[in-house]
Structures are given as C-alpha cells and as structure tokens.
Length: 186
Image (cartoon, rainbow, N blue to C red; front, side):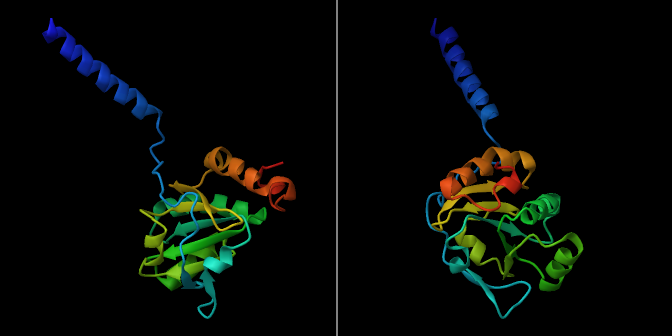
C-alpha cells in the first residue's frame, strides 16, 4: 500500500509548490530595506558635479528613486513613462549607476530628463547599500525617509497603479500631495 501512497504524497506536494509558484510575481524580490530609512549616501549630481544628491535631498517628501544606466535596455523601456510621471509633478530622483557621464547626459538630452536630480555613481558603490541587484529598480520613499516599496524591472502604468499609487495615496493622506491627481490618484 505504501508504494502507492508515497508517490501520491510526493505528487501532491510538488503540485502544491507549482501552483503557489505560478501565483507569485516573478519580479518580486523581498527587500530588507522596506520600512527602514534610506541608506546614507552622497553623490555628485550627474548634471552639475559641484552639487550633490544625498540622503538629505530626499527627506520630507514622497518621491521615487530610480536606478538607471544607459547600458540598461529595460531602463530605456521605462523611460517615457518616468518622463510622463515627472511632467505630472511627481518628484523622481535618479541614481545613475556604472555609467559614463557623457553618455548619460546625451541620453537625458535625447529622451528627456524625468529626474529632479540624478546622482552619478560610476563605480556602483552607493547602489550596493540600496540592495540593488540590477537596473532598473525603483524605490518609493516616504516623507519620513523610509523606503515603502521596491520594484525590480521597468516601471509601467500597470505596476504604477497596482503597487505604487495605493502606497502614495496612503502617504499623502489628508494633507495631500500636489502631484497626486495628475498621476492618477484623484
């Protein structure tokens, strides 16, 4: 009898893992930074090397931090949507990683610049503290400087509506965020 029961149990267990696996988002990788303050960093600005983009730059506002590079094909795929969000008034800060300054400036000149400011991280040192595994990655930062969400892969309207907008609405609350209605938040 056991020779029939054991394979059945193994089959049922494997089927359960398969079904659970199909329901998971393949782009979701848990981040140890969710609910924690953003990492301490200070980088020269991509567009003005005498200025800095730092932890303090992000304090006191709801904002996105987008890790990008001209070498990143998927960054190009999301870029137009980031420009659209920025035009609606959403503050987006960039971390330009492992890139050439000239190539990055040419990219922004040609495709539009969605960033309030973009930190230039040519060696990719700062992104290590952010737990970045690959570009593009986008973080939602709360007013208190806490990381609320991390998304790996290109930002799309669907991802925006499903994952980011509800958290932004929660952050903005009654005090509101001036950009909220323009980015689909009513």
